[in-house]
Length: 116
Image (cartoon, rainbow, N blue to C red):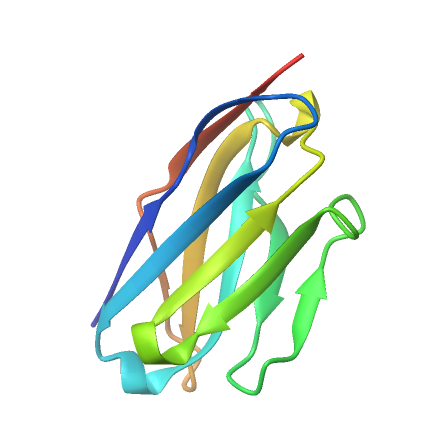
């Protein structure tokens, strides 16, 4: 089992910055890919960014150049640095971890609200 705990959400003004953290515990040696998803009210959950154990990253076009995913393996933590935030970035942000056997786990989510 893997447990994921997100933190760092809150309220920020448009144009501001915020960093989300996701701390993993449990059977973390089996984790390969970690990712951030978000779900805005009335919309489907979408992939925001992902990072492999080797450090390869993916960022959705909607956040490319504004958000950066990173990983601190020593702390078993993945981060999402968000800058130039827009009201349309308002959503619940979820951390997700994938094991090498494709079993995956979700965090409980953290609310990010960007005011205009």
